[in-house]
Length: 189
Image (tube, rainbow, N blue to C red; front, side, top):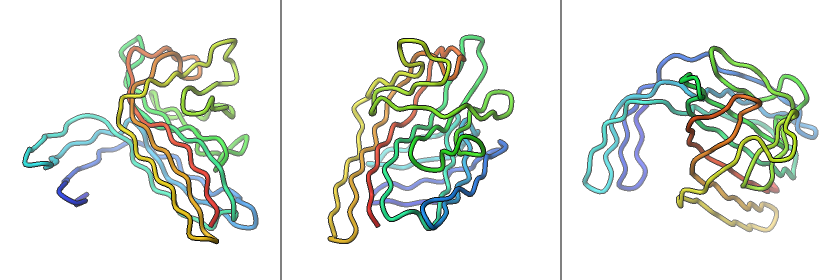
């Protein structure tokens, strides 16, 4: 994948990892998404006169559709390692593409599995079905945030996207270390 945004140039190659792909109802329309988290990524990024070689894991997210006129959602995706040293990735959502089964919720660890529906505690944590007391997946804001508010009359969007680290458990899988993104989006289109 080749990309340019402002003064940032990227040339990245994504490796193999079985994606999840779903089509979900959304009001009178539908949404489609294809995602992978924990996918091998290598390549080069040039930014601010510096060059960075990339060799690690990342998230691949493709989405499209004809969604309901008003949709509010929370979303998180990330990569990490469990306490047994196994690489893992996740994609979790509440409010969009989140039917009880055949949703876009997935955890990749030795293949992929679909957890039961989750609940977000704002942009602070994610609660899984088996969590007792404290939420399983806890987010630590790392200082990088993208926030945008657009109001074009009939079309409005309030969007917050935060990057940071995660601790706790991922549907019962204890994390040794993890990083990723938390997002909240309220949109009328």
